[in-house]
Image (cartoon, rainbow, N blue to C red; front, top):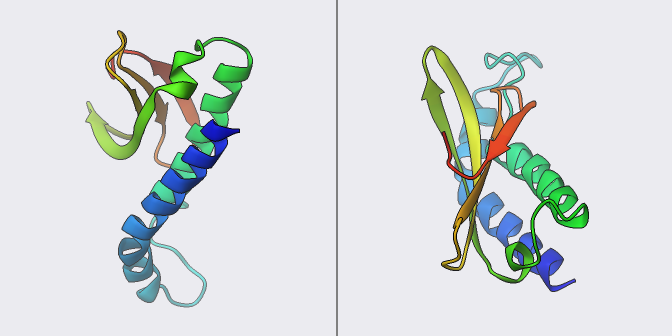
Length: 118
């Protein structure tokens, strides 16, 4: 339960942090069309990553230290060759491996996950 509350607080903080970007992008929209070809928002990507992270915890693919030692969640875009993808990084308190990375394509579809970020 503590994990869920921490994650909810992080999602709220990320939402507040990205709110100016989201508002800026929607203020230029017109006629119900989008210039982004249904690109995922950072918020949507984080929500999907949290759901996958919770599944990994519940299926014990990640041990309990990933729940009790979670320090932060960050989201950013990477360029791999000619492809752009979203990366969500779950960082925990100084235990090796220190982070788990979950990857999504520009539309928010799950690509994969690992402990290296590569």
